[in-house]
Length: 92
Image (cartoon, rainbow, N blue to C red; front, top):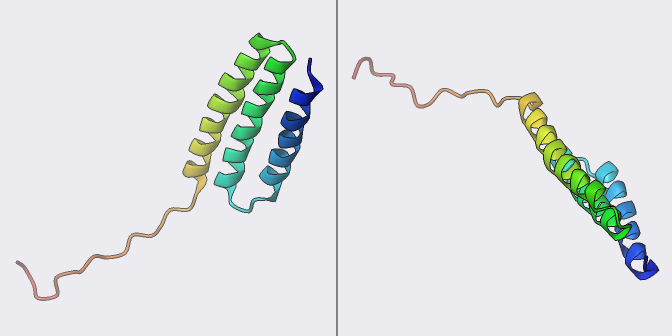
């Protein structure tokens, strides 16, 4: 376990965690959490736990991020439909 590998990854973990809380846009926060999960998977791999790293990458970064994005799209307010140029002259 080389400390030179741990320091940058741990620093980036702290930065991405802060950015996930700092962003006002929820989509940006969700994507930052996905990056956080990938960095965490990298840290697990550096710590010689490849099975945990694979599970974190698949579930944490892949599945959870996808579910968050689907939920965000389902809960976002729909834009009202505006009437398109209606024909004022009768039937045509």
